[in-house]
Image 1: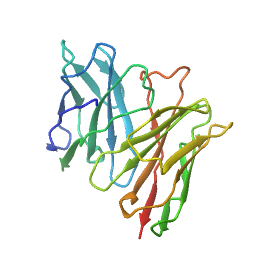
Image 2: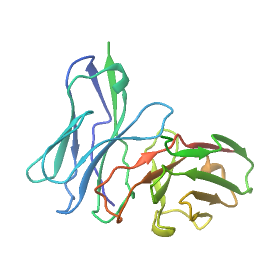
Image 3: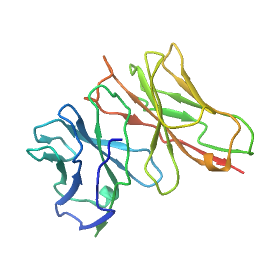
Length: 111
Length: 116
């Protein structure tokens, strides 16, 4: 099984950056790293994904360690709307949508 | 554009009954996956269909089955319902020219199934 380790919960202040860590020590060279988040009473929402290089999009940045055994999701300015459970997932390159979710990190954002 | 739509949104069934859940993917998406999310846990993968063929199956009993239709919509069927089948059932679709993980999945809002 594709297992990741994340803190159960984290807290942040509104408008401050947030760094969400993830360990994936059993990742192989062709596995992709994905992040999804789930707001209360909604389905998961794609945030970002990458393979080896750091990635940026309008929602967040993904920093991948050189040995690829860990990664960090960076929210540059947290808003109240970012309060959600964040899931870090790594997926075999030919797995398509077969995502193995763990427990995730519950992010709380204080005004 | 419409996102992934699932029906019904809520459902109550009795133990031993059968249930059919439906999913319409985003237009142009050929891959559909199903997940089960028990309260307080992350979603668990059940099935993936790509171009109407089963491409993956999670660790679920044979009571769970699914299919994908020529228009790429999908049904998840669960027979002989147990109390433990109570969960949020999520459908996700992706635009895949081939079954690769280098793409994002779009999730629906889910069907909340309660078995009594």
